[in-house]
Image 1 (cartoon, one colour):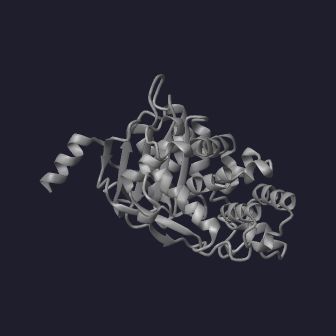
Image 2 (tube, one colour):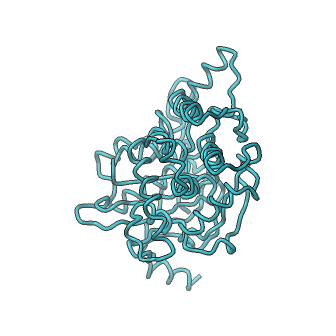
Image 3 (cartoon, helix red, strand yellow):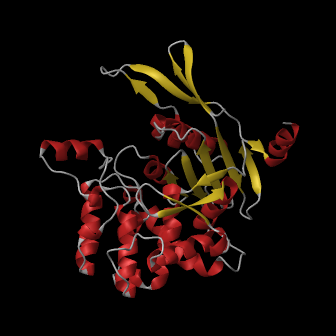
Length: 357
């Protein structure tokens, strides 16, 4: 049990979940719950799949900037800055944004942008979809390689085969052993134990630090993805209260974060994130019930960063709205609060508790 939602004198809801933190050599150090629980990556796959575009040479061919790469690793909020960035790339590539097959249902995520579009009578197009940058990466890769464009989203398409290969190498497994599912945007995502998600985000935080010969060739491309996300965190999320963006801003150059649907988040801690001289680490969080309001994942992520020594008082103040999310009445009065209530345990205690159960 990681989180309680308190309304008045009662605990109205509880969220169960799992957290795992791995050290610089990939060993599990701390956690709570089951580090081996299987999860779908959902949008947390994006930074790793994006490496395929960079390895192909397409990113250099199009002179993609860091904000342009960052929005391709993003679940963005569909603001004008995201749209303009992607439109510029499409124009430079001589491609139409009408190729995007991600749909537009429920978009944009940014409430102010959605209200403005509705007021102006403008229907949001697929480029406002939070996954449009990710889809654009497959389109650009296909254009560069001379592959067909209209079916880029099909699992058997060469662009998706390249993405699968990049993901497999990032996770240190054979492509043939990947377990796959389909995300809501239509592109493939993958299934891994939560501890492996933490190890992949360790790799994202410190690509050159890997000792795995299968992973090492991917390091230059993944370093470029990481640096783009760190340089333009507003492209990874948005200008408002998006936790991935806010975390990366709170500890600039020290945290790289990417959430996925159904209560998942991966966090890469760069060297120095936990204090001077600290080594890189990886963290993964999963809320069992999917966390439809995104309150538990936010509270748990911030609390875990506090317990790991990543966030101090100053950073915590800037993330207060995420640490203990508050529901308010139409008049703005606080009426409910989401409260994290867990203690990360050393791995020896984690497995001893599991054996006792």
